Length: 348
Image (cartoon, rainbow, N blue to C red; front, top):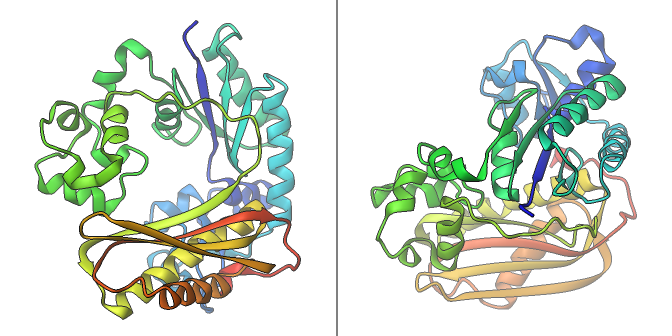
């Protein structure tokens, strides 16, 4: 039987909860994060704020300049987590085959559940009626296409990508639409004349020279192929962030800036997930694609960007990993455990 996978993605989750709970915010640009007069970043932005190009992880001061009338709200993570639990309960009332990806998104396997499109409509209706929030859903034969579909008509969208239509559906989309293709990788592909997924489908270039070991997966995604199953463990095992540099570099200020940004990213994910990490890892890749990882196991879990950044710097220095220019630099966290202290991570 063909697989039927749904990807349910809540619309501007944190900001939408604030608009729901504060009627005076509805229809206005809401920015969840540090106040504009403090050092910190945006955690989430309503669709009204996104019209001004405000986005998550942007410095709050920058957001205030782009959106002078934005309403800044401090995050209420406990409220968001509690809301997530209730939404996941709604999803599991349709099927036990639910893979929770984060507080605001999940995959469902509805392969043996009948009319998946009608079920998707019912899921959206129940979330709206019971929780007062909107969601967007992608329906397809695999995770990659389902996730692509959920983002296609946001907010409050429902997109079906049928298996027989997937190659044509993908053709006009930019290569950056594929998960794992960040701005640097997209630029590298574009430099070789590959702008769209259609051009990626038809290329005869050796993609390994451009994206390394990601080449085979990239080609499969371009053809709409993704065999990953829905993971029912409901347990996130690791968190990571990577930066591929446009030009190989061993420039210390550049590397430190990249580490700080990645530390912020993974720390924000720790906070969103309500966990801490006992293992911190760094990853480096050189010009010839040789890759090394080094890690440290801690007695006390880390939760903040500052701690993660300093540990990453320690690992790089101790193991002398910046002995030549780097193509890629990454931070990984694992051995995830409940946090032992409550800290506001976005203030770093």
